[in-house]
Length: 203
Image (cartoon, rainbow, N blue to C red):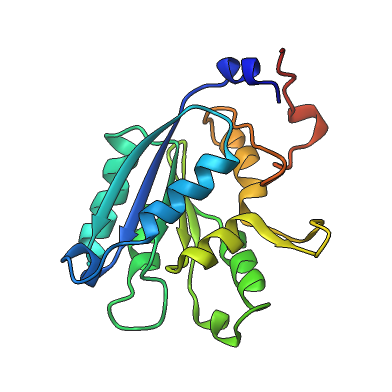
C-alpha cells in the first residue's frame, strides 16, 4: 500500500494487557507488552493508539481491566498475553468470558493448532476470543515467540504460508462487529476478506 494511502485509514485504538503476578510485582521485566506492540506495529498499516496494562493474575481484576479498555478507553481491539494454562492462577480465559457478549472459540482452536507444530503441551493452552460491544478481545500465549507465531502463522523456507495465523481473520471480524477498517502489511500478515468486503485505497 502506498504511504499516502495510510492517511485514509482510521486510527486503531489497541489495548494490550500483560497478565503476570511476577512481572506486575517487579520480580522480572515484562516481555509480553513489547512483543505485542512490536508485532502489531509491523503488521498493521493504520495509525495506532496504544493503551497498555500490566496486571496480576486475578480474575476480577482482569475482567475489570478488559471491560475498562473497551467501555472507557474505546479500544477496538484488545490483546492479552499470559494466564491461559491449567495452573490454579491461570484465570485469563475465565475473566475474558466474564466480559463477553459472544465467544469466538475458533481463534483458540487455531492458536493451539499452530503451537502443536512446536510443542505437544500446546493442548494445555486455553486461549479464546470474545466480542464485547464492537471490540474484539483475544487471549494470546505468554511467550514472545509464541505470540508472533500465533498471530502470523507458519511459513515454509521460501516464505509461503503453511498454516494461517489468527490475525488474518481479525480485520474482517472487526468489520463485522462495527469497528474500523484495518489494513495490514501483506509481507507480515495478509488479511482475508471476501472480495465484496475489500476497500480500494487511493494513492
